[in-house]
Image 1 (cartoon, helix red, strand yellow):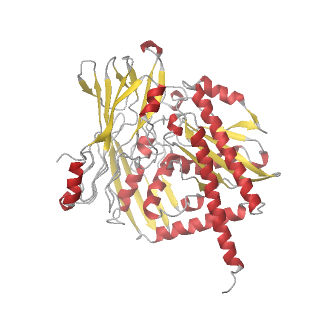
Image 2 (cartoon, rainbow, N blue to C red):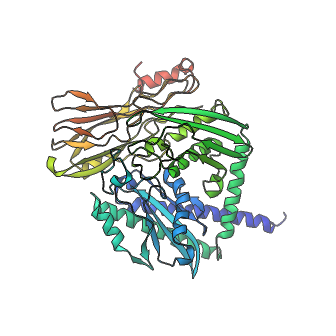
Image 3 (cartoon, one colour):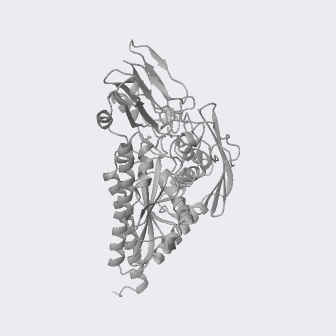
Length: 544
């Protein structure tokens, strides 16, 4: 047997180092998951973590996390470097912002960046983000008419200098939050998880005798870009367009996307989409980019690592002032109502190019049950739960039920919410017949019914409740999923439907019931396997 050549050994070592880098950022994310104070980060995993080279280019992301956070952070670190050049940083420095246009799309997500020093040399940066339950203002609702009303904006600032924490920043955040302990705890958790990443990367560099990760990073980005371009080049060249209508706030929203493939380059243009809303459902361009490219990569290059190299061949254009590219000071709190629908719009564009390989539409936007009460009505509280609809049927399988596609977040256990607030969940169950019929059935949604244990009134934001008038569409003859529905039940049992995205009030002794939207079906229902149909009947997933 011939001995391994140096090039073979180097290739194997590079692969080992790449795998190690992934494990480093995953440990970073798990540290955040374990230490976060807010339930939406700790329980639902609404967070992200990643490592960047000294130019601010994302090299690797953790498996744990959401595309909206990861892909917006891919650009966000560059904004930090524009304001704080690497040469001005020192060991022990930490930086922070929650600027929606320069971060992850709304004020509720803090981005924390920590430089890595090996000796006196800066070798990398770690970044992380998570959703914090409250940043002041009108709270988690779409009722504000400008970002100034939505909460406290922290510009790019030093959170720590030389290892000394800037308590002034934390004092501002806490003074403006209804949940000051959770807000402070989440920010410190972001710092801590970055520090875990720093320590593990230094250990890795020592183990492999690396003075820099520049060569490894350049290789990763080059190979990822090459693989992404090759995947795009396998598509037929051409231009395709898709449209989607959403419920909107004050009026329906029209999303229009034109996708053009030319060789190994892909461009998406949102020309023709609705103008920005007067209320907080607008998706800043960074968030629009994040979910547009995520949807495209899901179908075109799912196995290519997600980093600055693989993101580069995808170009997203949008008109300034549109709902997918709002300008300051447009309100943006519920930006995922638009952003999380964009992968399905991308699927619609690719349907003609990849016939038979594109899933049906999903519920898309998660329904955030942001519930609170002020002192006038009884014991005050401010909590957040997550409600999940159904995913669209796939070309070879039924859709996943109560699954957050595309965000990937999990649900918050009802027991956690019931401990945090005087609430009781009377129902949380599969909603039969909510998945669209088809050769492959759409994923089922869920029904959730909530009341206050003490019988007092409370409020719930309806900012993210969509697909009530425009359910998820089926594909290739599949039926649409069930539309969402919201009802408020009074103490005497009378039910009143709630329309729109304004904050709703559950009266004393009343209940809130939400029926989430289901996923669309794939293929003709007439061709479904009778055995599968019978099994669905036995399990109560369908009624007839």
